Image (cartoon, rainbow, N blue to C red; front, side):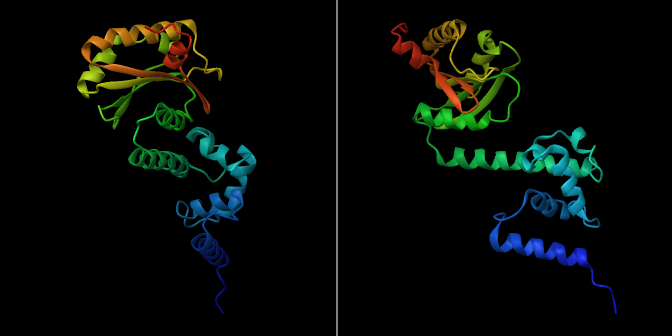
Length: 231
């Protein structure tokens, strides 16, 4: 009698578990094992999945690791590592696309929530410009600078180029400083005022300057208005 293919039956059982109930009830290693079925069709992916969890400590840590780190785990080569990296990127892209398509950005809070999600995985300081039309519909978001101190040294020429290129009448500056402190510095307040006044004659309105730290954010212009220092 032919020997039963235990691995084949195990794979089908795991697939059926996912098909009938999604990932609910899966252990972290089982999630990786299921994914690796499609990447390594001829291998037993169970021990590889266990090694990944043991090496990195959690499923999220596996997905957040870079390709070089992943390939240090026995059984994972560059191709497998690139697929593992692709999954969270697709998830992030999907969630942003879904959020963007259903939200009308007519409130600063909605924009802030979107930007918090957008910058959630960023490890470097970044300054971006978020653009809206006259009906507060999303036009686009562009990164202007990355690195230390990028929000206090705004390239006004680059900002003007972006705003005129996309015909954006309204814009929000978005900055994620390191250190987890969303409260604006004196320099943040000064540059916010300066940008607002500079672009106002060109019918380009700075609606807000959002400073994002993790899940927290602070609206600089609102703070200025509350302090009654904004003209």
